[in-house]
Length: 380
Image: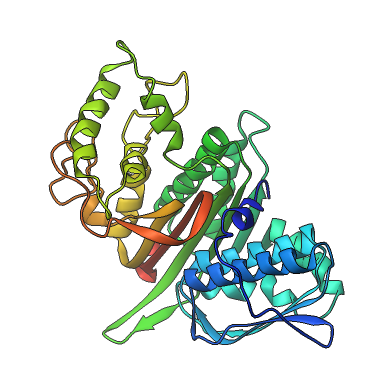
C-alpha cells in the first residue's frame, strides 16, 4: 500500500526494550486476552526497535498471541498491515501463533491472510497476494490502486453491491453499504491521493439469548495512509477564506468562531475540522466550494437505525470520531451537530464523540460493524 510505512515512522516515541532472540529468531509475545489498539501500538514499538537494533538484517520473527479475541475488525486489519510491511518491505519471514476466538464483529478473521503465517515459507507469497486482493465465500478484499478511469468508482460500487447480495444481504441495504464504501474510497483518492484498502465480510447466522431471531454481521474496514489527515485540507482552506467564497463557508466560519472558544483537553481543534468535513456542501479540496458532504453520515445513521448492534468509528492522526445514530441527524439546513440538539452552531459535539487514539494514524481508517436481523435483510 502507498505510504503504509508512515505507520511506523509516526509512532517512534517509545523503545521496546525486551527484544529477544531465541534460536536465531526474534520473539514477540503478547499475553493478554484482548488484542486491541494498545496491542498494535506495542507491536509497532517492537518493530521499530528491531529495525533500530538490527538494521537491514531479515531475521525471522515469531509472534505469539495465543488464545486471543480481537477488539474489532480494524484491529486485526492493522496486524495484517504490520505483517505485510515486515514481509514485503523488510523481507522478514513471519510466523504467527494464535487461536482467535469467534465473534460476530470479527468473524472475518477466518478469511484473513494472517492464517497463512504458519511457518511454511511457501505461504508467504500467497499472504502477499491475499493481502492485495481476495474474494472467497463471504469475504471481499481489495487494495484499490487509484482512480485511473472515469467510471472506476461506479464499477467498484456495483461490485460491492453484487457481492453483498450474493452473501445474503437485502438489496436496498446492500446498495447503501456499497455507497458508503465507495464514498470512503473516493475520499481517499481525492483528499489523500492514496491507495485504499477495503476489507468486507458478511458472517453466518448468530443467535442472542433473549431472541429467537437470527442475526448476521456486516463488517467493514477501509484504510488509507497519507501525511494528510482527514480534516487537514479543510483547515488549510479555511485559513485562506476570502469574501465571496460562498454563503455555506461563511456559515462554517461562524460555527468555528463559536467552537474554538470551547476547545479543551477533550474537544480539540482537529475534532472540529473532522466534523466540519462531514457537513453537506463543504469540501476541503481547493477550487471546490459548492460540493462535498454527500450524506455519508446519513447512510451510516440509516444502517445503524436498523442494526441490533453496531460499532462505527473513524480514526485520523491522534483522534477518533465515533458515529452514534442519535447524533447523526441533519437540521433543516443540512448541518449536523454530532449532539443531542442537532445544533452545529450553538452546541459542541456530545461527550464521547471523540477519543484519543492509542496510535498515531497517518491518514484515515474506518471500522464499520453492523449486526442486523437476518430475516429483515433477506426481505422475509
